[in-house]
Length: 514
Image (cartoon, rainbow, N blue to C red; front, side, top):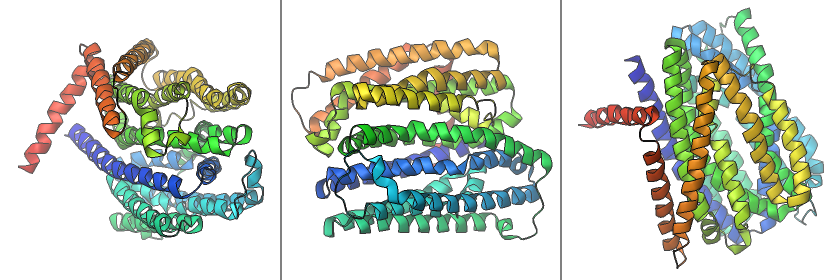
């Protein structure tokens, strides 16, 4: 019964997350397309650059959010309301402090923001535009911590509905601004307003769901729990640094060494990759709370079987995505933004490899997060960050944009993945099971490469262009990669387990509707 509850919560979270994400992605693509039509490539570049600078500023979070969320799983499972209240007070103090810190640092950086840009364009009010991004990030910390309690209760679909509801409203307002005024100041004002309202609504919802959040009689957190939070937070500081650099350093290096226009082009490709990645991440984010509960109630062997199935599904999804991107990426960019936003095919292949290497880490990262293994993987973060900076600096001067992407592939594949997997098996599963992961990873990678090459060869026979050609190539890519991958691994335990989940769950859902 408990297993069905975990599965039900996970699938409900996934379906709502996907639904909201798909609508949000479609509107974001429309908005960026209209943005490219009405405003210059330089404005597209500062959108990408400022967003990534703020991602690095968000290292002020220092990982305390994830550490406290992990600490909430046990008290929630045991119904310890007083301990939950105590943890949420720590959350509030920390996040208000973080929001103020981000605002102060951002205001300090604003006068010097042009130093991040090679051949800075003549765009007026550049510093003011940057401050909009600063405030948009800072205000979210004043309210968003309460959403973590909803998430820890395995009801993330509630948070998702609120978040995407306001995101959809934001895109609608921004489109209206672009159509009628082409005013970038008003465009950013819509972003800030919707972020503020979204977080106020989220806090109000959490207060209604958990009335004890308004109570003032709050106990102190016990020393053992507080020490655990401090320990995981220290480790997560390092993870935050490496995570922020892996996501944002590419734009910073391209801006500083290549120029602002290539940053805008790079940002458009990354927007597609990140949009697809977020759909997958929503699935693994949605199961993290359930995995945390699983780790407290089930045997190690059962936990490991769940991980293997998750890894198989993870690889299957990214194999299909990789094939689709190889076949359709440039066609999509040209139809969406025009030929001036197109990268050479070699760059596209490197971006697809980056997407796959990053994407197949979703399963291991979800389990690492749910089990609170941040301390054991703390050495990974500085190793990844230092390697990424050094390789990016060397490679960008040789291969420019391609060098930055290659640096990301090498650091994620050779350092991040290796160390994450080692610590996950050592502290959550068993060392002797680790060989399975590397064999499977190699098989999944080779299968993806071969199936993508086959799909690309077939798609190259399409002799016409336009939307019809894009749709046909997408069908070919998905058909070849999905059928090929399932056929290659149809005799594995993971395939059987995946089919078992579908057969067990889907009839139950349909029967509830009848």
